[in-house]
Image 1 (cartoon, rainbow, N blue to C red):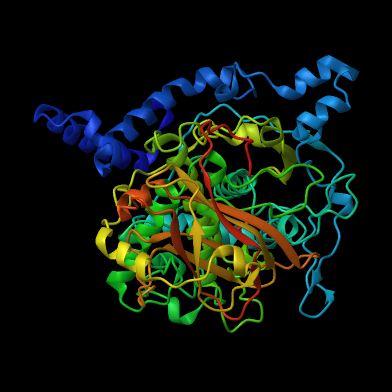
Image 2: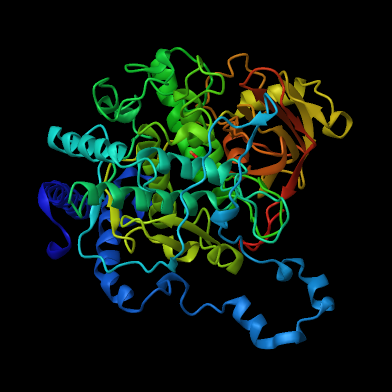
Length: 598
Ligand code: C2O
């Protein structure tokens, strides 16, 4: 462990770990067992321990080369198919429609094109294509000699801020055509989400890294190289990006280091009403009571990390393969806290919500990478540290996921090809996160039993079958038949959601709630959200779907003999832009295998 750590930051981390260890031992001695930890923030100690185990296994894993340890022993379906050669015929394809699919291939940089601004019909005012080079190599994760520990942005030292500022400043001063230059790095995001790349061999089908299971892996690789470039520019192989700890009340403002107008970390294109001390509104409810906003935020975190997910895809996003249309469906975290932070920081004085409020420009604000470091942290927390009984199978083993690939320029300006399978474990990639309390971990909303029943009984909402499709330009309330009577294990499906991709969209979903005060989310009736960050793409419309787990909600609302529930859809954005094709409730599939998309 010692040899992997270096410098001041890790000394602090070790000290904290020792404190946690002590607290944990005290608890064990006082008779509080480990099991109690299931849903409590006291789980920290498990986190620390798991972290250590993973760390000690790390170099053993790396000795095995690029094959990801987490996938060893699994049979790669594709290899089997190749092995069988022509045997795999049309009959089989019919019974397994996915077998014909291939993973998303990396873009061909020489075919990078300009994208269209849909508001004007003209080409986008910027060219976000990267510089071309001849040689591309398959990236191998280097052995981990120094662990980079990403710190919480609200807790860093003046020395850290100085170093970070210097690194970004140097990045901005690199020649404009150096792929590591600040603007070039920002354009990576633009190119991958803006229709600049087509899927190789698939006509004009765009490559899109949002609203699917590629969301977490793509952004992880993006930040990985960004961090290494910064480290290289200041000669510090332990340099780690800060994370904006917006899931903790202490981190719920824009981190102070981004606020100094003289700093390289500053960006003036931000919503001036949301600068500190404004508390971030992860629900975009517009609620003006900061304490209520904090309660909303913790509820949202609990909902998107724990309560609302039945399968890995509910959290990660829907399958997205070669030949399929972009935006099949975002996961809970992407469409939730992630989208809200973009929208909340983006500047309403700008035409398209620049910088953070629109995908093409988001990477121009240094705060973007700090935001996404926390998004990435959510993936790690969900994957390794959350109570696993909620989503029994968190691994997506589908080869079309694992073999999907991207290209980036690394810290030496070498063009490299990377795959999803190599980014599933952040420690193996050589970075970890400072341990911070997770106050949302046990933030289950209080039960709402009797009241919910009265509302249900008195509701005169129309049946779902009679009103869809519906344009969501106002609150919509419908009765939806349950799949089974009583407290079943069920999912709420919002299907054929058609969105205008150029607009900010956000819709909150409630059950058996006719409360006028839908700006308060810390109640059992709040189920979850659909939201998207505007992006400028060639196809203005996307068709997508999401599902929300109802099982815990049924408990909290005491849904007894009911065979219908009342669903309320509350749009938070201005003026339509979204049509819901249908709503239904299905029984949760017994098997939680990934690949079972519906
Ligand atoms: Cu690629 Cu937060 O977006």
